[in-house]
Amino acid sequence: MKKAEATRQNILQKAFELIYVKGYQTTSIDDIIATTKVTKGAFYYHFKNKDEMGLAIINEILKPTLARSFTEPLQQEPNPLDAIYSLMHHLLMKNEFLKVEYGCPAANFTQEMTPWNVDFRQALDELTDQWMKVMTAAIEKGKKDGVVRKDVKAKQVVLFIMSGYWGIRNFGKLENSRSVYLPYLKELKNYLKGLQ
Image 1 (cartoon, rainbow, N blue to C red):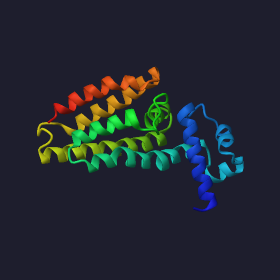
Image 2 (cartoon, rainbow, N blue to C red):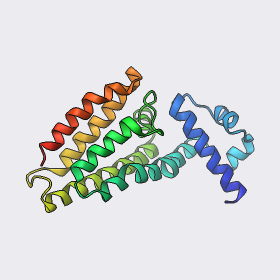
Image 3 (spheres, one colour):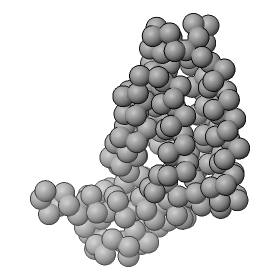
Image 4 (cartoon, rainbow, N blue to C red):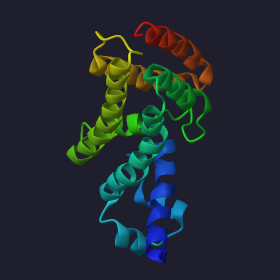
């Protein structure tokens, strides 16, 4: 990796970590520069402004992380209902990247930026759509394979599950404890069993 590319990746990673903790709007370019220890000139060499950097975080950090952590497990497990539960359990109880006190970074960006910025809305919609398509396809495949009931409406199920996930992440932020996730996971397991 060339030095310029490494500098850009360092800015994105450190800025993401800072924004995840503080929020996008309250994180200034000066905060990012202080954290990354790059000059203002180096920052502006790589990004025209903060929003361009924010979009790069979504496209270059969140989307690949989503593909690895959220979508690949759904494509590898033969029973999509087991895969969905295992994924949610892992994301809520075991994943070290996602901190309970800060919630879901994609949900945070969505709540904070989509009302004000059409480019953020589009990038975050693509990110969410990617997860929805993979989960919907997994459920449809489960219907064909006979592990999911034929009458199940996959898109409705996915919307319900994703809404629950984003919602419970917010409860986790409020309580600052993973224990709040346990009743959600128990009910999710019951819900998924009902789809067999």
